[in-house]
Image (cartoon, rainbow, N blue to C red; front, side, top):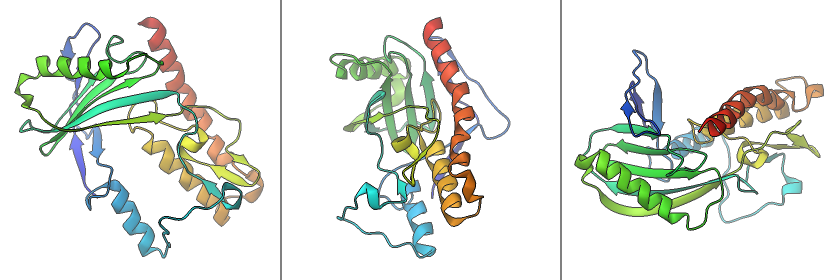
Length: 238
């Protein structure tokens, strides 16, 4: 699947000052989700099919008959609203920290090969949430007048964040957002989603000791506490 390397990101502070952190190594990579052949979804699908996995569409299975529950979030801890657009702007990423535009969270601008996305994430419930996206788009257009946006569509999503003492219940593993696992900043949930699936699969296959049950999954607990405390501290500082 396709990924785009970045060494630099524009960091927009609450006072609208933009700094440009840079790394000599690859700082992060951007991947795309969806049904196009170059997306991470289709790349992982091809790997699964190569290993003999059978994928069934338009069919449901009851959770009680599953070994792994990966059906996404049941509750909503945060929501995101965005707009996809065409542009001639070069590949670029901006992360913005502004409580007026993204209460309790952050907004971002991503442009990859002529397609851009402006998105605002709301950690706290807000009335008339769409206005935050409109104001966020206005902010980016003022800061980056050369964006020359041609809107394609608006998108939205939700996420759930929770810490549990175990991610295995009644013999079933709860992975990704079904277990409340999601990255608090970079990765948009994908890093912990994939990691938790690997841990669950290893336990089922007996690669780890079965008497540990979901011990490897619960090791994520320690990894999550740091980002949570940083997020809480950041919210109070603002």
